[in-house]
Length: 130
Image (cartoon, rainbow, N blue to C red; front, top):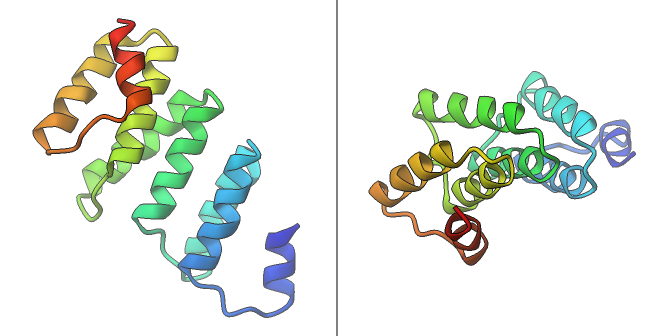
């Protein structure tokens, strides 16, 4: 609804506005619309930033869509143009632990540590359950 209103009313949409709407969609668990919105923003000439990726990956993780989360996570890692932050790593680790993918969670934890990123309490709690 907000997306349609934003575009219909002729707002000069920038990455901040897209991120606000995307964050709202992800928090509501509406990942189908969030994913569509994510792709639409690039088509409109507004390119995702670190926060955009963080919101989307975390949304996929929170809704149990690990394949989608991992695909976007890997795409961002391979592109090398953006830095993945602690929010993304912590979301991925928690989701991997919930999905009983402990080897992958541990590997991601080691990668995170090597980059100087610290685990938050939720990810730590998930890891100690290993």
